[in-house]
Length: 428
Ligand code: GLV
Ligand code: MN
Ligand code: MN
Image 1: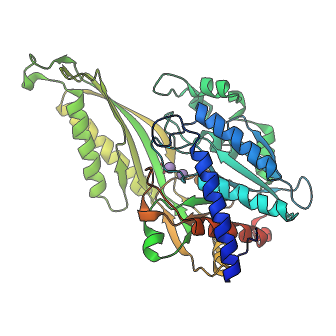
Image 2 (image 1 turned 180 degrees about the vertical axis):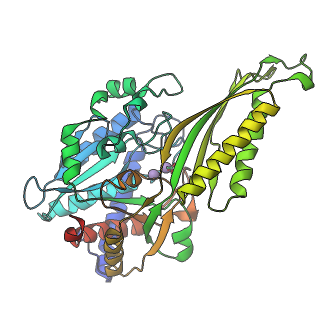
Image 3 (image 1 turned 45 degrees about the horizontal axis):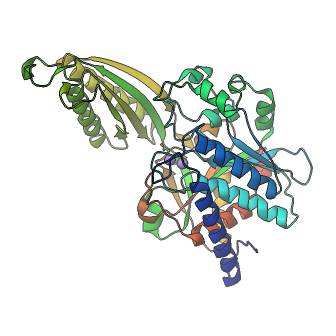
């Protein structure tokens, strides 16, 4: 299969063909699910294990050495012209949200492997090695922590995160050990640290997850920066009681307080330019039709391209929740589960992506990312950049998520061409 950046019809046919092959790989990957009618693949779950095994097998067929590392990341290495040369890291994630689409994260992983497969088919070696990494904890859905695998590679993993427990009380460290990982190695693995210290850059292809490229009529875009995010778990304790006998005036209803807080979150974000804030999960205890809720727990996710707006917005939301708790005579606990600052992408790499897209006949749009990505963990660690791929209707975190084969094939061709023209001098 001939994969070319040029804009002529033969090149386009080759890219469409490659895109169709990529979509077939993505269908296969979507078959590794933890159950339900749509795709759900949580960090360190049986589906994650199965997907990792399948992926490592494909990486080996594509000419790489492959292994699953201490954090459960699948790592494939394709040597450059000189064995042992520093690597360019190509990554994204294979964990998903619940009821996910098939492309969030996985698109970047299969695109990277397909690029190596093409180089290997041609017997072509670049002046640097390529390491494809399929991270396992980009969504932060199973445990109240995020980017465990990415941070282990970047050298910024906090060992306290090993104690974070999922909804069944299973701790991250226990789940990782059962998966076959090495919890003790996440915070300080000298071999990984040495590899990353020598690496040249981190590049990631990802579905846009928004409507900007589609509305602009452009198949790929170059990300300028990734919005920062703060996440919290709020616990509310009231008094459980009989739904028929306790007078309304005397109640300490944890669910009513939670509802008030959800609306306060929405109000604050609506009235703050540049701020988005979401309560995506609400658990109620004991959760029965005839019992006043004695407890409630909710998640809070606050984001902005501007770190000050995010921090001030989160502080204002938490103040409002504290006032609601006081007024409703319930106890409130606040646990911050993650904080990831906004991450600007590296200009030289943005230009390299844009130049490769232009050689393919596309004037790429430059746009910020509202979603979080593995790439943001590498900000300040390695030069990093992202290429976005057009998303149908801007729909993501939804089984209806969709891309075209032509756009996927184009993204792979642009990534390959970017690597062939990488401004290595500007990076080292
Ligand atoms: C990942 O998709 C995130 O932005 O939460
Ligand atoms: Mn993603
Ligand atoms: Mn996602």
